Image (tube, rainbow over all chains, first blue to last red):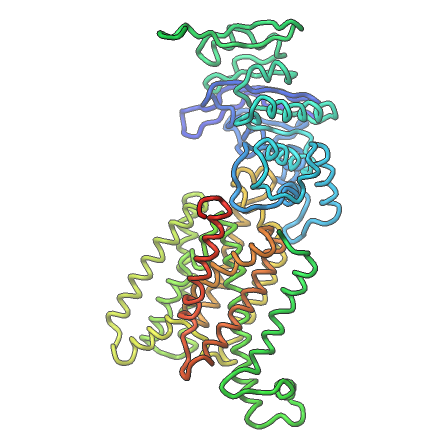
Length: 263
Length: 333
């Protein structure tokens, strides 16, 4: 499995590139974090990697084949998307929601059967929420919904999952729960692209990091070298300091000039 | 809590056929069960009066009621999912406004039952064609299609007003008014075949495609990422649903509320998964209209227009359902 974006450009309106000249490579078992400010093009990049949008120039390939040349169902069988958690209109059960991931494997007039439900059971087991199968999706927590969406990606049969800000709206503990599952699945051979607003999560969980600034990838590399003061300033337009914990783990803290009135 | 599936399925499958036979017995002229079967199958002992009554009057009427109830409810359920909006009903796309205009036009010009049915059907399709055509230029998103439906409905309502304005107040206007109130009083075998064929094909389509309707309730990019070609599927569902609703409205006039309320009842009973929701909607819809039409033709010495009955029962039913919905979300006590 190898997902490659090669110098892609994308614009919603002519002349206004949201992505310009972005490249990245995702190999099997890797977790790649995409960091960047709001509006830097992270979600658009994810759409291009998913094949939901087609870049205007450059190409996205899966094992050498352009995504635009794959049939939608074949593409969906290899690349899954884990969207941001949202409130659904209808209260499907967790099992029914995950089962929708079988769509690429079922024809227009066919219905999911025993094998499909077995895949759902395995996926729920893999993300550790087997006991939630019959609960309404509307009545579980945000962290649990994120796991449901990961499970849906697994039953899709996709080896590569694209996650849009999985840590959004979650407390540190639940962020860890999700990203721990991501690491575990990566050790089994799945690969992930994760957009994030948390450089510290990238330091803890990523094998690779891509910084986006104004739609261009400014740097890519392993987290320990890519995440430094210079790149953080370029990406977010403010100063950061990198500190080391007693066990040698690195962490990013923002440097804020003292506000008037603050003690 | 969802009750055991097999029991639910059995009840839902049994209710419509039982009601269907039951309503053949009920009427101004009551009939014993054995007489119904004798008449239906032309056995010995079927009386000269009963056979025409049951075979020519009550049977086509019951068939029409069951088909129309199922059509409106199944399309209502499918459209609520497709537009991700539980307040949508089967007439959202301007079907009924188009049909009303078409029927009124035919009543003004000719008055034959075939012309009325045909014209109502044609203009219903035209109205939805306009909506989908407009929507297609702007990406066919649910919002665009809903707004297109509102605009096209308003246009045809204005045209209907124009026809009422020029219609002869002593002959044509009452005919138009009664047609708009809806009812199955005029059903004869002769005008039934289009409805039966369309219902058969349409309901089969929805039964086959029902699991995939779940995918239409997801956000567009999400469904696309799952490998679903969402626009063709959406247009296909709208097209088949529209033809079913148009055939129903063209045969029975304006019958409101069924397509809105029945899917909610079905959802409360079997859950939102379309795999169970679609058959449940069909069964409950058919049963509802069989019962309401029987009330319409037997409760008073003269027939009560069906559209009035569905409104009288549909409004409180919806009120009740809506409060339950609010209570579940903690927004009402």
